[in-house]
Length: 464
Ligand code: IDC
Image 1 (tube, helix red, strand yellow):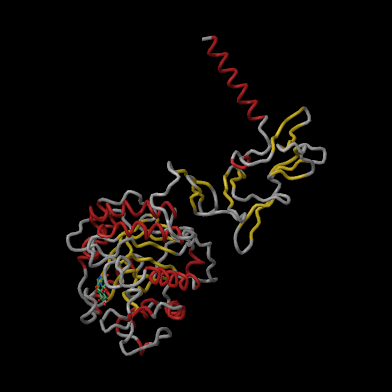
Image 2 (cartoon, protein in one colour):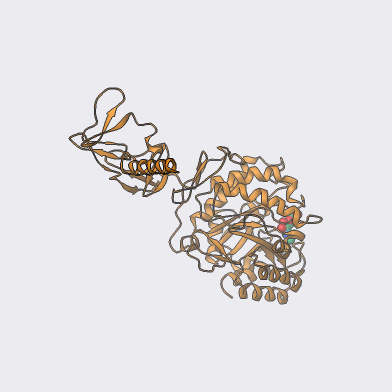
């Protein structure tokens, strides 16, 4: 018993000694490649160079100032600085590069150019949007290694939706701004990004026209299995990637949100192309992890025999891949029966629920109170719902429009403050296309260029 007490006392003494006599350069990470050693005598801490060139005097040793007499005086007497490119930390003439520093009890990592790294894994360590180390994973390797380069944080124009609302978050069943106020996204979906009747409408002026109507969101429909799909060989992958990059860039410059839509359809089940999906979402969530305006729709419309169990298994695979690169982007998960059944998802939600919403689609001439019922059930069970595709004609994109049903949907959407996206920005001769077939304009559309669908939604976006 006595011996135990003695040991405890020694442990205590050692702990106190360690706390009091810590070397001035407190960050373990930052001391890794120091070309010398800190030592202590009765007057304080001094620094000796390993190469035998003597002691540091009147200089900054990696953020610690050694005075004229050769003793340590202060540490991290630096400040955060920023320019257009990013933030860095300046202490005297020194600034950290390729290394970690500890500052105010938080760890930060600086790249080879000295800029603070954000939203990224540095080996096993993840730094969040403020550059603060927040989590560690067990392995150096990501689940799927991205093949893309990460882009820097963009700026958004004053007064735009993204500038005003910032990174969206889900609270309860509601989509909210970064500060927690409820928001409504009003969007238009491109046609298949590479298809003739729509691809030319992916341009800055087209998006500007939509923005002037009150649209704050663009959905980029990246088909997977249809002609020109991401999982086919009809069009070079690099052309598809460039089209997506252009679309995101145009929307970003206007301060609009973008839904990157992995548009499964004839492949029926998202697991059909799960290998490609894993790489796609690793690549894009990495590339755009500094973009507050990108949302990921991981499977457009699971259909035919695809069950919610199938979709959930897929979602529970893809969501962690996105989350490795992006902690908080909103993720939209398609639901069975051509995304009509968020109620099924609500009964057995995905594992990682943060900022996840379930998808509902409607075509007003085909769908009505049954589908609204599924949405209500889902929300009553606590599942957030996002309508990433809708129109006012039949479910095959054709037929005539049904204004009575459309108005019921509009009321339902407004009453519940749901976000919605119209299908689609094309001039194909089908009712869901917003633009008349004989209109060859690719922006600046006026009412006479629009079909009934186009006019109906333009008025709705504008608040009528
Ligand atoms: C349709 C297009 C049509 C195209 C077809 C390909 O409008 O021109 O030939 O895809 O299969 C959806 C789908 C969406 C459909 C749309 C209309 O998500 O891809 O687009 N629709 O059928 N779900 C319900 C309707």
